Image 1 (spheres, rainbow, N blue to C red):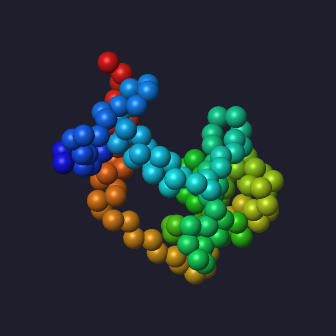
Image 2 (cartoon, helix red, strand yellow):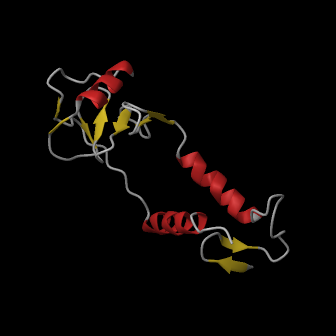
Length: 140
């Protein structure tokens, strides 16, 4: 076995690339990373920002939206992923209401309800960081 810091173990007899020059092991890794993003859709509230809407990842979790300011809101209008209450801007609130989110008229987002904890293995975070750096390298 050979080891590559970004793509992990690779058998010596494994072909180094597929058509188009993508290393076959890297292709497998990319496919697995893309699977992590299943269920996410993006909306453009004002033609220059994006809101990511995720389906629930765990039992008890709601459909939720990741806002351009780094905050997240549940479909019922409560805070998702923790944090202090905040006032959502009009464009985002209107866009989420069109997606059936219950954003209050005041646009004040508060009260998270039941907390859902997610533990990510540090090795996964390190791997994804290295993969991102590898995939974002300029072509030679």
